[in-house]
Length: 452
Image 1 (cartoon, rainbow, N blue to C red):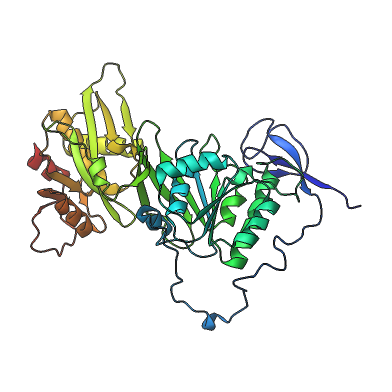
Image 2 (image 1 turned 30 degrees about the vertical axis):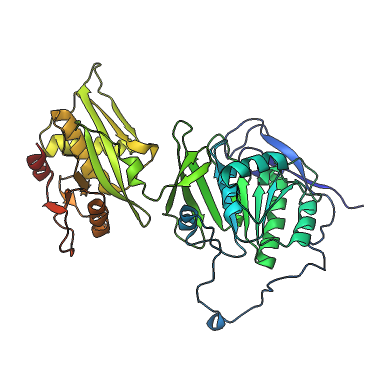
């Protein structure tokens, strides 16, 4: 009889140890290391000999490899396609993570219901009746989606063998368990084993598999870090329960860019694609208020117009407060120092609060000019014209620095009805016959002179 092999794993971060210890040296958590059986019996292949293999991999000389674009599966969801890089690549493994209740299952069920391909939706968390009730609310029409409630991978592969689906969705990977590992569902060794079996199936049959993954309290995907290395794409579904908008990002993508962004609006009938996010990021108001400025930013290839709000008030306590929501607080302190040194504004004794509307985080340096404009507007209590927008970076010496793809930002501002955009004098602009007026400035003093 073969000896049972065991090892010790940290249930918080997935670090492996040869013996038990009280504290994990990687994540510094206490009493999270447990012993797990890593091998129970000799493994057999996930498939039976009768299951046809759609594609067999053979070694090729690098000169003989076809570099033409591989066809992707259209998900009929514009935001999902954009984040993936144009659709789902056959044989790929996609991992979707997010906070509990944020809408991960709703998003993938909605995608599965709209797909014209034969789709198998495997759920280990909900019954078939629960999924049916949600599906009728989201997409009541005819669909080619099959629902399976199962957690044992061997039984799942038997159903896959009979159905031969074009796409498989697993909700979630933490609920699956394999007979080859003698530990509970959600443990480190079970997650690794189940993911390995699914990856082997996906690569051998060219069938894409989409996994839903739970996250820890720190926001990382639960399980070993190797899980994110094993899959081809890692998506993050973000949002605030107090807001109806959800953001889909790609933290890793072997088949596309990680800079793309998808925006959804949570409704009673499911998730609605937001094709023009600038409309939701700019507040609608009848009267002009001080402290508001609009910035032209970019998320991947998509231009966005976002509203920056600032509040400057006299400090009640001895130390003035500096608070930023959705913007880097250290960069805010730098811009305040530039305003005080180069433009002569005494902000050292005043509280400054900054907010990016819509609940999103922006790290594009092109919004520096809008941040400065909103701070000046609030400090002087002078409202900026609502058809003004800004797109430039501010340097430490007070110079207005150029930003990339400025013409795309200008065209987006023109499309949304803005009359004037402030950009750097050093940007090369070849646009002609545009309705929007482009104001070129080189120093922060020029901005102060034109706004106040």
